[in-house]
Image 1 (cartoon, rainbow, N blue to C red):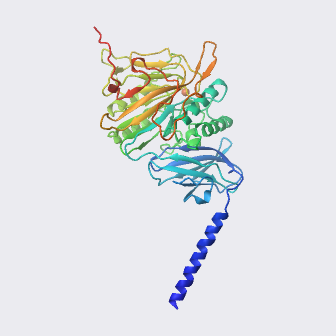
Image 2: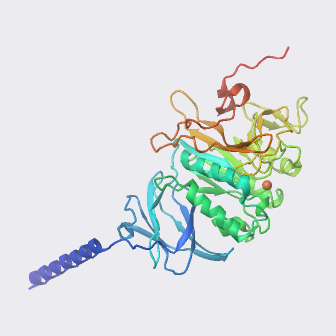
Image 3: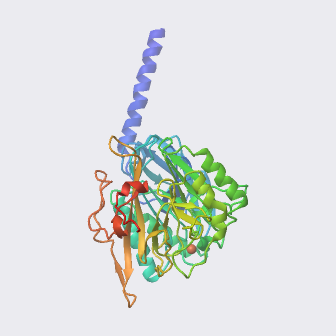
Length: 465
Ligand SMILES: [Fe+2]
C-alpha cells in the first residue's frame, strides 16, 4: 500500500515538473519594454558583494531586478535570482526605484533585466569587484554640464568611458548646470549616462559619486539620485568609503560642500586609520585644496583639516574637480617650515600624496594659469583620468598607471574639437591596453604614463649646481 502511494506521489511530481517546463517553454519575452528608464548602477557599499540598481519607474508597478551569472537575454524567468525594490522616492519628476543586490560573488559577471507588469528592459550586465588583489582599471573625473558645447564634451567623455570599460567611475561632483534641483537636467544627465557609458554588449559601469557645489541646491541630491549614504541622520552629510580586493584598495568620497572639519574630519581620521594597512588608499572630493587656475579661490580649510591626515595615514592619490582643467602634482607632504615649502607643501617622492584633477568632464575649460613649484603638469581641456591598478608580481611592486585622456579642446575662436570618436574600443580581453588613438596629455619628462609609486617613473632629473 505504502509503495503504491509513494509511486503515485512520484508520478505526480513528474507531471508537475513537466507542466512547469512546458509552461516555461511556451513563455515568450513581452513585446513591450518595461515602463522604466534611466537605469544606473551605484557602488556605495562593499562592491565585491553588493550593487545598487536604480531607475525611474513610470505607470505600472511590481518592478524587480531578475539576475544571475549566466546570460539569459531578456528571458526574465530563466534568471535564478530576483530582487524587489528597497526604496521608492518621488523627486525631480521621477519615481526613482532602488534595488540593492547583495550576497553577490566577487569578481563575477552578473546579467540582469528589470521586469514590471508592462514588460522587460534590455539585458544589461556588470562585474562585481574582486575580493583579493587583482588588476583593474577605473576612471576618475567630474564637472559635466547640461547644454551647448559643454554638454557635447560631457557626452564625449561618457562615450570614452564605454570604450575603456573600467570597473567603475569615480565622478567627482558637479553633474548638471545650476544648483542640482532642475528635474529636466537630471533626466538628461541620467539618460546620457545610461546610453553613453554602457558598452555595446550591455556592460553597465558602476558609479562612485562624490558631491560637488552644483549639487548644493539640495545637499541630499546624491542620496536622491544614487542612494548615497549619509551621516548623523542628516542627508546633507554625504561622505563615505568602500573597499575591495581584500586589503588592496580603499576609496573615499569626501564632501567639500559641508563642514570639512568637525564630524567629517573625525570620520575621515577614523576611516583612514581603520584602513591604514591597505595597499592603496585614494580620496575623491570636489574642491581642490590649491586650484591650478587663478579664477578659483584657495581652500585653506581643506588644507588645515585634511592635509595632515592624508599624509599621516598614507593616502596615495587625491582626485578633485571643480576648476575645469587638468593637473598632476609630485607626491606632496604637508610641511610649512621647510625652506622649499610652497603653500604648505614640499615634494616627498617616497611617502607623499599625488594630487590629480581638476574636473573638466565636460564643463568649458578654464586657463591653467596657477602652477606651483610642485606641479608636474597642468592642462586646459576636457579630460578624464584612466587609472590602471596592478598588484605586485615577480618583477614589480603594487602600482598604478595614470593617463589623462582628452575628450575635447577649443581653439582661439572657441571652436570645439571632440576626440572620442577615434578612440579604440577595448574588449574584455584587452582591458589594460592604452586604447589606440586616445588623445593623451604628456606629463613633461614622464611621458603620457604617470606611475605611482612615483619612484617607478625612473627619469633622470637634472641635478641643480
Ligand atoms: Fe564645482
